[in-house]
Image 1 (tube, rainbow, N blue to C red):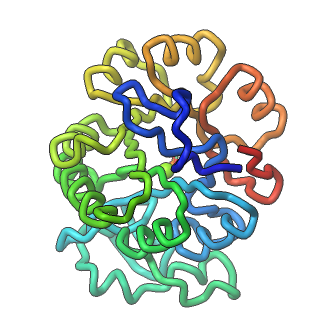
Image 2 (tube, protein in one colour; image 1 turned 90 degrees about the vertical axis):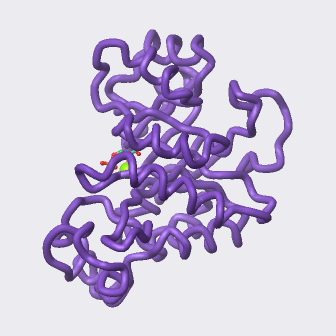
Length: 262
Ligand code: G3P
Ligand code: MG
């Protein structure tokens, strides 16, 4: 399969004329069921299964360093305690983010966005960075992650990430600091005016819970000139239904069961 980074046909162009960065199949949280989520071990595992594109969750340390973590707190996926956004990166970087998953991954660190960018760029892969702010830090997180992505990808010759967020304010922050990086609005329900909201944010994609993505919803997104993506599809029947309907991207945990055909 291609990671689309060098394709130049129109189907890979976003409405704004920028290159759409992602193939159909995208590994969720790195590839974070078989390895600890949002760690480099998970990215390496996904790559071993042939995945060339990854979703991950990014937030800020107290001193403003973007790093990977899903939850606002540290307990579930690391040896840390309390709110992740209240600790400096030097302390977060010493935590064990692997032993909660399995002994084989003991000592796996929380990765900085910089470390993940080095992996993705070095492998010529693609990434969907979900901006997952500590509550109250939405705008600032979007702005800082936007600046950091432009710094990390500068001169790499590689396709830029896709940003996504459930938080419109985070997408506004990213738009302010990195307008050239494509954005996607994440939705876990279809609230009123959701499509207008995505358009107002200048989004190139809408990414919904897969249960929300019926044919009418998919058609409405694509008719508005945006890509339609879904998370988190781990069921083969659901994947087949969505592919037949023309879905543009599928975020999955099941990297061992779904070979990334494109
Ligand atoms: O970005 C898609 C998906 O990751 C959203 O849900 O909770 O796994 O971050 P969550
Ligand atoms: Mg996510």
